Amino acid sequence: MTRPPAGTPYWDPAELPTQPQLHGVVTADVAVVGAGLAGLSCAYHLAERAPGLDIAVVDAEHPAAGASGRGTGLLGPRAGPAVDRAVRRFGPQTARSMHRASERAVRDVLALCARLDVPCGLRPGDQLVATRSSAGLVALARQARACRELGLDVPVLTPAGIRDRVGVPYRAALLHRPAATLDPAALTCALARACADKGVRFYGRSPLLALRPGDLVGPELVLPHGRLYAGQAVLAVNSAAQALDLPVGTVLPLEVYAVATEPLSTPAYEALGGRAGHSVVDAVPMAPYYRLLPDRGLVAGGGTVTVPAGVGAPRLQAGRERAWARLERWLRSLHPDLARVRVTHRWSGRIGMTGDDLPVVGPVPGFDDVWYIGGCCGHGLALSVAHGAHVAAALLGEPEPGEPLPWHRSRAPRLPARGPVRPLLRAYVDASGAHRAACVLTAGAARIRTPAPQPPASQPHRPSEPHEEVPPCDPTSVRTAACRRPCPWEPRMSPSTWRRAEVRCPSRSRSGSKAVPPPWTPYARGSPNAPTTSRRCATASHGTAGNSGEWTGSRWTGMCTRRGCPRTPTVRRPAAWCCPGR
Image (cartoon, rainbow, N blue to C red; front, side):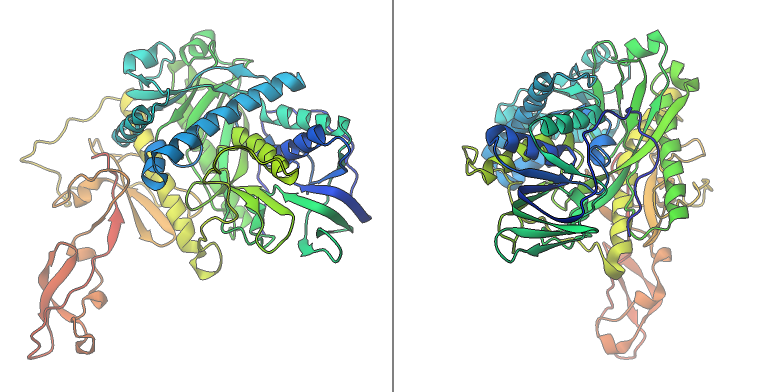
């Protein structure tokens, strides 16, 4: 069982429509499961286009209780993988369509806020995708080149252009617009009230237990205290698809973290771009980001991700505390006035991730008239509203013009999210978050302390020089910190076991290593770290090889211990992950 998120979001609870618990047998023309932005957008557009339709919205708790009410309120025009990766995977035409679809989604949310006329703290402004690390610079260069070739309006900002907007020493940025920041819980609750005004029925505290094909027409939804029979159903349940055994591929639930502060001083607020409403997202995925609030507070998120499934409550809470503490340290490095600012709110939320960074919006295989929406991969504020409108049009037989987008599909790639391989998946997710955050935190630390001098090329660090290691981190999160000894090198993340990661100074393996381009590329350690039991002769029956030999590339070459064997034993060296920033 997956435990719910923790902490109290910054957003105040808003007025909600009446939502009794569902009891007995209930029927509806369309049943929408999930009262988040995606489900409510679908119900709203259905009720608006077909006023006589009987629509029922069912939720395990209440509207805005899930990811839609626990986000950070960043509204920006990005969707799916980075634009350069989208070009390589889908071609230039599809990549251009994906980006422009995300821009339309942002404009649709802005229009929806104006139509609902609710005080949701909407502040239009630019969204800066910036970087302070070498890996981020390479990623931004690739994205800028792809945007230029596709004819997309994504300007490149130099350090001087960044300083005109925010007073944080970033090295480069891409300017995305239209963009805005808002209160996601207020928007979700306003959408729920608008649906109720159009005659939509709400049922709260009624989690979906099972989905079955109906005996007559449409699906049967099994709930704790009753059943709901509908002609059509929309399952806007995001990462809960795994618990319901829906055949939509793997939409992995990840827990992400956020903090909010008390009002900042006027100089700090203006220096960070608060007057213009800018938000800053790091170019390295999963790295920390921030936005400003209308009351002059600051919200920071990202930096750490956790796979909560299968983790005990004490370990999960310990991981949350470390993630929140890491976010607090990062935000205090943004401006000197933030050194003593008080953090007033800390919370976590769940997002749905897919193996290819694309959402899943389409019919559920094996079920007639059942659609699924989920897996927005952290871009759900704009995409959820667009997905709900798309499914509503499909249910009414009014498909949108043009070619379908890559996320209009019924399945995501399958990942090993269950069974004995789950620890390996958790280690991979933790390692990815560690690497991406390490580049940002190391670059940020270099701005607030004097860097150590680079060692001369003739006198590189030797593994024999005792650099102090950062203590091993908890399996549910990752520790990202620099070497405690004055050292110019960025940290290297190397998994010592499948479920424990630690950060070491790369000087321990400085000899023979070389810089690698992003994304992370595995490189091999030296022979002392290789287990002797893996040094086997190429002829399997000959057993292990002797200790004499040497490493060549990624293979061990030495003499076989069996007399008269003409073969040279080979074995792959154990791989570790190195930071590409060196």
